[in-house]
Image 1 (cartoon, each protein chain N blue to C red):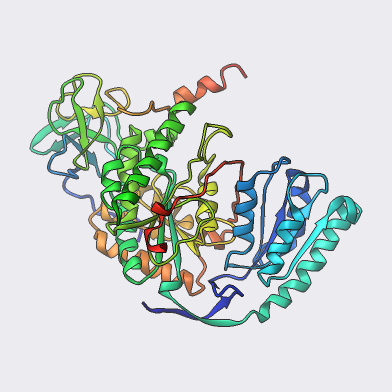
Image 2 (image 1 turned 30 degrees about the vertical axis):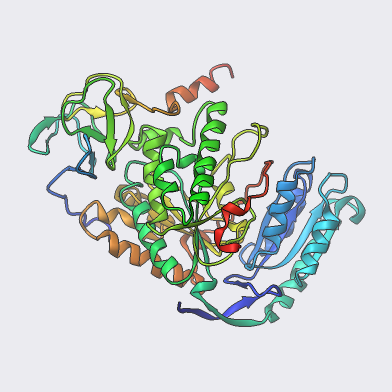
Length: 109
Length: 402
């Protein structure tokens, strides 16, 4: 079963017609050129599969739509093909903690 | 409805097990070592370790251990008490014996200490393993099966491969008459409306919404949601994004009831398990890790659990087998010894959602018929139980039970 992965032609997947983000279906290297729904995008950093890219330019404060529903809001302007992640969007409900912030809990130890 | 097997383990309450486990249970952390030593020589012979670490009594913990020690997958129980903890050991022993199961209690302070207690426990386990071989064996059909689902170590692939594939499997299992339980109201935050609209009655819909709002309040007090740093590394950003992916495990069936830990589904169908405590925030995080949620699904009667993982969780569980559905094809290639189903094929165009859903149903039926899962083969028997506080559910939460 393993080792026979066929590389899909598209690097990204749209989950719903209403979405303004698409999802990477394979890991991509920094500098790699990929097609995001007809627009050629050069990635600045390597990204793992499952990460989101803007399907079009998204303005700061705009809702991020995935699965056809809002999963948070943009915290800055994001260009088409830009990485939509913790540094460019936030929850409309609860703060999200990362490994970096986790270190806060060990800083005094 | 279809026959799962002809040799299920019949219990005196009429429920049927797909495993015949001997459970050794410590009733306070101070008796954990003795209980673990009793299990050690028998760990490959279906003897599992469970317990509660706290010295102060807690009605949730008692209710949970009562449900777990009389679970249909459990054939016999040995309780291990230090002697001075607050747990009602006699009350639990009486209830297990009342269920017709062989049950024994070792009180370390009365038995003469560590060595004497270990020897006493092992002698009982040895004799009891032979005794429970004569449990009546009967036919069990799919409408007698209870299946739980959970996701852990989620990433950006979980919500587009393994979780919706489990949803497909849940729809088919509900169709076959099984009771299916999804859980973690904290991972439904942001999906209140979508979930409540699926309730079989408006009253139940309101209860479902309330349970998710309760989770949002609870997690807000604690400072953050059910979201681990690994989730973000895997491409997820927010609680509501994780929620949308997590909720797809439930499939598309109507939701016919709301359970709390230890409540059993009254009939086949889809149920939501509310794992977030009632009242003010008292004992910290609702569940400190995935195994605690699996144990709550088992306390609701789950014969087995479907576990979706993207980052790569390795856990199994005491009492009931866990089937691991791996969402991420890269993770599967790295950790396939821990996985039962390769759902990441969907992303690489090597399988459809329907095909993986059918594989999950097949694995569920095979596991119910006795086949070992990856985590069982690897000896995983995780068990976590902490302090909580719950109010009983009201009549609106189980419309079919009235």
